[in-house]
Length: 135
Image (cartoon, rainbow, N blue to C red; front, side, top):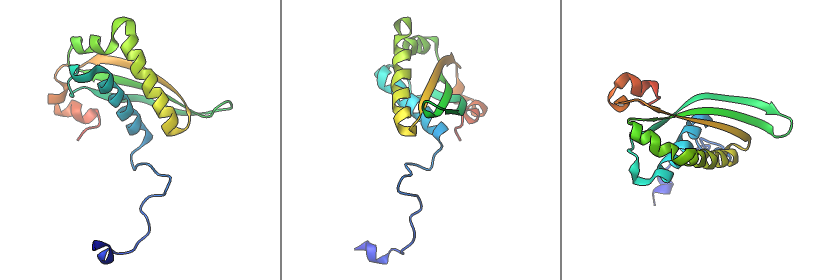
């Protein structure tokens, strides 16, 4: 019913465009999603992922290669230990699953380096929240 009242215009985005967000943003969100999926309800949602480095290179073997260094920020040492897991197994799994999804999404070879840092009270510090890319 409403369709006849809508103006006709060209599409805002191309058929092959998935989102209007940057690949850097998507990388952080994919890592964050894997983080919460693999830790379940144990980890508070105040945890975040910050992309420290995002570099694209040409590769003869793969065409396009992307190197990403990211930091997972948590509020307590116990959260850090939970993310790293026994002998680093959970962090490795988070990284592997995120890398595999990002390679498919970005159609490239991807190297992903993850770090975990504790920043107590970061969610209550307005300047730090902004420095992590939140408004």
